[in-house]
Image 1 (tube, rainbow, N blue to C red):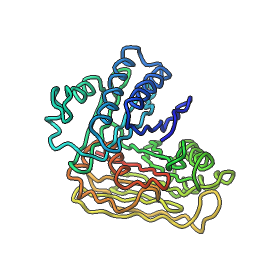
Image 2 (cartoon, rainbow, N blue to C red):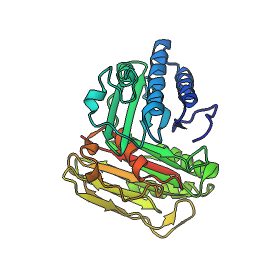
Image 3 (tube, helix red, strand yellow):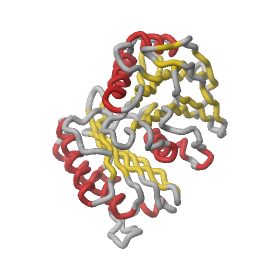
Length: 338
């Protein structure tokens, strides 16, 4: 977690929220971000309330609280997303906590109610002993439909930018995901992953293997990256997957079954033996989770009742909190098709 840069990137800025001064910085940054997106003044004021209350709740009630602020866009409008994550104590009765007047610290307890009244969309998941993840979006107008994919990246401790990047696209009927882990850390790693995202978004529609091949051919001027591309095809009931390097992909079925997906050895842009594509079953209600090696595979959804039915941002935040390591950049991308 670092000082706020003047130009906020789309992946946003993280705050470690431990003191009232940081809470004020979160509020000011939210206002500045919304102003840069040309949001109406009334919505900026309401976003300010959301940011102040969310950060204040972490200061008063939480352990190891962090907040991400980032822009979110459609072709028609822009908004601001806030994701608040803490490691405890958690909330035993979420519905009770949502009511104004409830408090666990001798305060008025109106924070959550105030947040939800201003939010265009929100979701929250909490477990006693593990903590809470709150995802809030404030849009200028009516919010768009929830996304089919959402992800988070976080830099290694001591860096201001993450070498990991995530992206999704829908082109010619293909719904595809990308996770990229730039070699090393810091600005050069981030540049490699940003280039991977740029090429991914501009490459013509094709199979995951062909997209990975295109990425490999165009990343030679960068440090290179471990990366993987997945395509969700509900009509065929398949996930198609191709990767180079240490990117993990898993399909979680609604019955709790999990199926790991295979990446080949290599570094996109520099070395590869072969790019191979594999198919995996995709049943209705399944969730696809992809992540860099800054997120460990020990995470088990059976320990989080109902989590995989929640918003994708909340799922990603929970995985990042409990399976992400501070000793590496971390990136996680979650997708689900109804």
